[in-house]
Image (cartoon, rainbow, N blue to C red; front, side):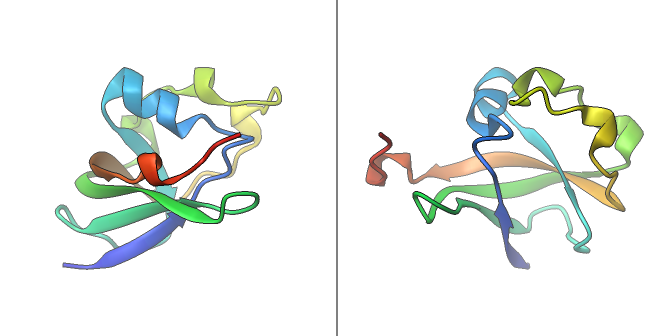
Length: 103
């Protein structure tokens, strides 16, 4: 089993909203992950913290991912976002949000 850390820019994508609505997030990556691997989601400034531990539930192609454009901020154009070589479906395992103090 592998363990990775994935960044998340909370000012561009509402990953928490996507998790709450869908129960999972499809995340593009270049890493060669397998079902059952662990992924920690972290954010940088101003929090610089890990806020979720996830498990890889499935390995997907772009065409198999969900449409989650509603969670993009700043009128980010989803067609302008580069496609990744593979996508992983992440399901939350542990929430570290109660340790963070969001302003």
